[in-house]
Image (tube, rainbow, N blue to C red; front, side, top):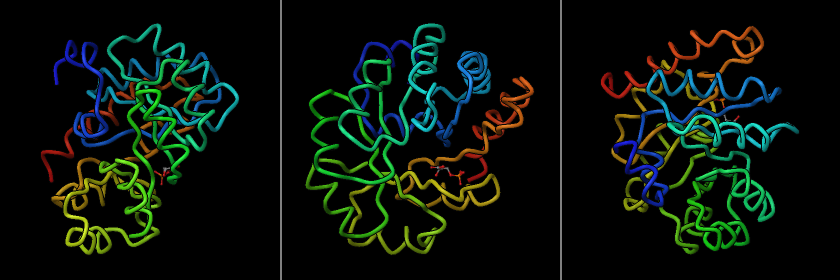
Length: 219
Ligand code: 3PG
């Protein structure tokens, strides 16, 4: 997808998943890290950025990236309630990722026009998300909850669902996951290590992003 398309169109959850092989799961402790980190990821070829709502500065970080890094598409992670979704949307998030699914969250994101990748780990949760109109789902926690074998088992009854496995995904196991027909991308925290943020090692984050983009070719 060209950058212009990204900004003219409202995104679908599937477009979010298909932009790059990996969605980085990001935990930011300082607002001043947000912009250089986002620029490093974009320079490495990753522009869908999931900033988790796990720190008090998360919303301010989203605002800073939305304002100063127009090449990035900022998403909110760890979205657990309608109010999380509303606050994220106001802060500039253009997609949301949740660790689970509730109809209240599904409805809130629908009403906000915020594409949602809801987390699922069982057949019943997939069916609930589908009932809410969601078919591009995060499989969480992927490797802990069955990994590759689970994704293969789901491809029969849930052949119309695309997954983003997240949780325990590494550069080593990502190629096998990405080779599965029902996997659109993977998610992982390894692209933005806490120590690289603390040291301001943006070159390392850019290099990790480049390596993540190359995973598609390896798959
Ligand atoms: C998370 O919610 O923290 C994500 O699942 C990332 O998990 P990871 O650290 O195993 O990549």
